Length: 591
Ligand code: NAD
Image (cartoon, rainbow, N blue to C red; front, side, top):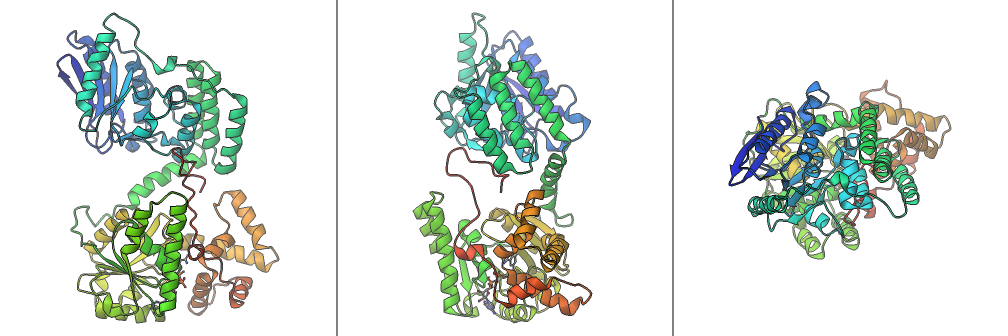
């Protein structure tokens, strides 16, 4: 059983205990309903507190049950919520740390809610191509108001409990606890208070009975629909969130619930939802390396060096500065260093201007950055990442220098897009310490990090770089050594065929438009423009000698020969992040 039952005086406390996030799997659900029945049957119990052990109230559905019959086996989540609502004794949800998805829907089925500050509250189902399926779209607007609720549902983004508590007229939280530590005692006190209040048999409040209206009705939903449609492109779920929330304002509660359920079930088997769910589990699986156990000792990474202050070097450095890790950048010439530093400054200054970064944080980050023109200054770094031209001869020279100066045990990484990491490792006398760390452009924004495992890599090097990736908030995926690793290998034929279309007379705009209409976030030429056309050019030139059978577009080469190397976004000092500074961020799936 993954729900514990204890009685404190005249209050029963049901504690979800299903690590890591108290997922609402079958055994947790049955644990709740059994405990609830026990509390209601015990005459000495006057009220009930529902809370979560460890690091969450509840993170929602148990992903391990996804797609299995267990996910819907009775008592399913809807039945558990109904049981809470129908409890004859007041149920108080004591919410802390994480309250998401089904966890929030569970809390909305309780009669009262008390939250600790700092709790992340969200209905993130849209990120899996779904809408909330256990009343979230019908109950959240009733407690928060239609607009904040729709923003949360359509973006799926977490909002801090204390921010939600500040919303005028909100009924999500009846009380905010002074702190997470104070929550258990304050929840018990609230439960006792409510037991006394309802001792006369007065009806217990249910969110379903609250009114739900928007003063502008149709006009507001039309506006929301247009806005969401514009941003969500081919994803069906965001627009369905609008439909479901609208139903909360136009239909009776039970009809709204049935409408929500129907949408949820229809979305569940769409290709978009299936793909997003696959992605969700695949991302988690990718962070694990079968022969490198989680408890593998890790090397300490307290200082980092970056070779090359170009498009990638600057972005890579920012990741570490953001994480509070000092970075030393090396270039061949002072002008290149100055240019690189100026770009980093511009990126940060843009964030300060938009209110996303405080001035003092900016100053702290820049203070962690230093530069050099000499390899002899790099020896103290624990990790060095090379981001110089995509040319094996240049990489060879760099890695020979690194082998000479880096301290024993330092990790030597290459950001190469396509080159053979085993070959790069062979330029040193420590191939066990050489690994590929392939960032994507703009490196300070893009989440993906390919960790390229060389054949001689030490296991603790792998464990260390995976931990470093987490620290700098990247999604690390391990790749073997091959031409293009994973991402670039996947788009290889796509880019090639796009190039042939140019040779046959299409404009890049036409090709991009068609691909964006199909659903790609960016067409192949816009992407090349951002990353730098010269990178692809360098790769094509290398392949021309290695794989003569592989033909490429002539137009793309011609452009590069004329010096059209692309826009190079990071160098221009902008980022693609659209994260909003408002308390209710706009949808992130639109990126
Ligand atoms: P870039 O031309 O913008 O920057 C390269 C920098 O390295 C330049 O500033 C150059 O002065 C410096 N440099 C060259 N030789 C050097 C040396 N011997 N010592 C010190 N500095 C040297 O290139 P980039 O786009 O940043 O690409 C760098 C690496 O990252 C390449 O291997 C590329 O394949 C890879 N990469 C690029 C992208 C992208 O989208 N641009 C994405 C992922 C990986």
